[in-house]
Image 1: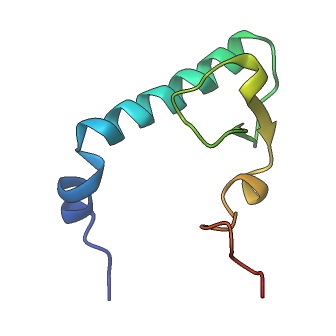
Image 2: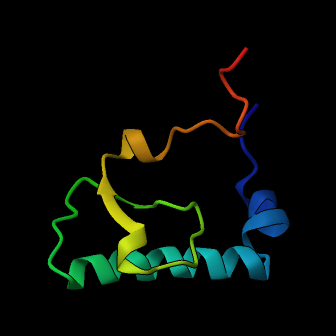
Amino acid sequence: MARDYKAEYKNYHSKPKQKKARASRNAARAAMKAGGVALAGKDVHHKDGNPTNNKRSNLKAVAPSKNRSFPRNKNAGKK
């Protein structure tokens, strides 16, 4: 089944909270670039998981494979 991007945007990405989070992630990337950090092929990782916390101490440049795959809950992978 194909994804319905229009419905996804309507039901999730268009919400004010998600717009603010996306804008904050974009601002974090811009701040890292302005700070002289090389971001070619890298993602900006928020260490505390809060996309609105753009303190320099909370940001880190990491490989996309590391930033986009993490346990979705604290018990993932544990027995």
